[in-house]
Image 1: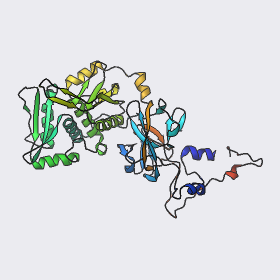
Image 2: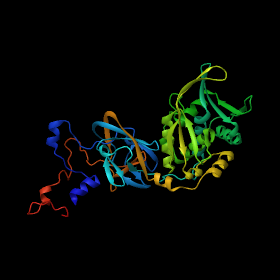
Image 3: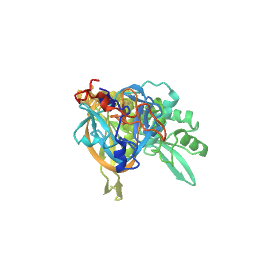
Image 4: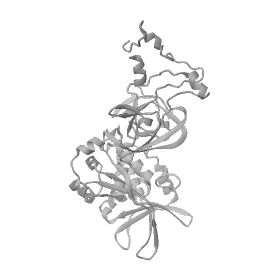
Length: 406
């Protein structure tokens, strides 16, 4: 039983270090797991594995964990699920399925793995300040821009005709948080309202508030933001740039695929199921004005999950349309919140890999995937552990048979 438990639980095990070091003198462990940058779920949302301090959250329960520790350099495989979720592992990393934990090397396209869509965040607004700041950034990413003219930058906002009913409220938020003189003006066509922040100190305040890098509105660390900020961010994004379909789905398009993966991950924190897929491929064409247009690939995050109505839109126009078209929760979506098919498995090369050790449950949520933690605990030079081996002979009876019950 103890031998089997060592393998199941991920507690310190045993291996033939002499045999391993004959092949590689630098052998330190046998179970390297994930590269830096993989997102692990905590009570504050997803954090990169290198930022894990002492706990993780799985299925809305908190468990103590170790910090990330290095486990070597190994070949890494990228697994993508049918809804677009991606995570990276070494070939011997166990992934949870209905048939137990199965190593990546034994998984294939079409296999189903277990996923965790249990929400860690609710949609109740606790901090209005954070919520409003999230809305402002969401609207800016959707329809805003940085511009550079006469040796200075401007922060520009725009509201389309379908968002006019929200423009007054948004204007008040900008005045409250950044510029008391801000106001929208109508364009000549009267189908859009625009406004700008032009003073250097106010632009710096805007950039510092959101920690935007290199005047790139997508270059923001969304995961260090609060629950209320993320709620506002989603509402602002979908209000200004999202839409509803007759099928009852909500859609957000972008040429920045990685940004949509961030949004999918934030939706996951609220327990919302979504798909990230290609919307249209890049193409070149001649417009009505006889000028050549070069469109880039465009991606979309699509939400069929009726739980999204609790996030929804900030305009009555879109929220009403969503409620009218939204269908009841289906068995199909409920099941997809529990397990998903593997779409692809690809080697992406050799890289340094790391792991964490989780107490009691020995599993964690890696970008929605339920996966096993490391099976070894690494020690520093000259450090020792009370359990370093399992004396197998101690479990063998007088007839030479291994007594597993003992």
